[in-house]
Image 1 (tube, rainbow, N blue to C red):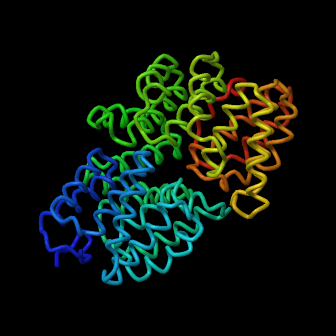
Image 2 (image 1 turned 90 degrees about the horizontal axis):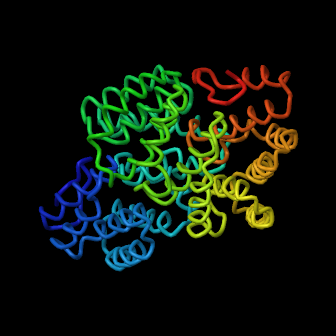
Image 3 (image 1 turned 180 degrees about the vertical axis):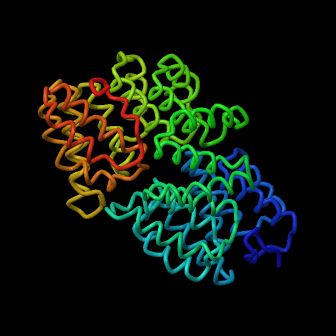
Length: 431
């Protein structure tokens, strides 16, 4: 029986199917294009290979094709009887994950990785900033993730994929000194790993190394295909670096060419969050509003995310609605989120409604009201999900609101509460 790259048995009699499956997972883990096609080759070589169909569903979900994901998952489930225990549990986990049963999938995760610690394609669904743990609503999600990754590290040794993921988790928990060598070793072993590049961009951001981050991404991005799922997001990172460095022209060019609503090639969630975040942080830094860009991303948000459900994406929908000035639509959106919270189906609790109220007040130029709404929940923003770099949007909004409200006495305390490391705060009025 063939094994995958992590030594796990695969229930296929076809060496070609096993090789194509491994290649597809490698592309998924590195965020390079072509994973779906690799899984198609695995299925063509062995139509009865259940895990290849499950992996094809995972690739389709990442591409935003929910219908294809549903079809592939149904085929995988039909082929599941008789699978060995590891593969049967792998498939049960993906059945939960791919059908949006996040709480049940998260509950199943610890037992699965304890029994099969090298099942990387299960693990990766939970350990990114917007994975199952990041979206769980836990206030201690960074510490919890580091504990999980520290415990798994002996099972992976010097594996390049795990090293980048472990380093990212450490960086998000404020352990940059421990994170950097893991990420640098990972990139040295696998320079084309887009997640490794992403992790290094975060380490530079968290250390306040704007110039180093810009140099790295300027050198790395040209070799990464535009169809890669992280291309637009890495361009967003570079664009933020250009804002921090005061190069507005370079930042706007990146937005127009790589991470704006018309140019972003990544998944729908990243297209929403990167575009909204850039446009807002562009304004917070003192640059003029791009009404056309806001209108485009507002239309996209309404069409693609018609109902709340994932707090981090919802945060950006709420901001787009606030900028659009449609108070009724924003109130309806928040009411739906509050209903989910009351039903126990919104893990971040009341944080999003408070932030939405703050965004709405800011957009109305009620800056004192924005401070009043945001300040009490800013310390809980990690419950929303996303990386610390992404969630700086909340803190920067609060700082700009304090400036505009004529409350300079509040700024030292707000700045002192900022986590150690990130030096640039590109907010007009603070420089």
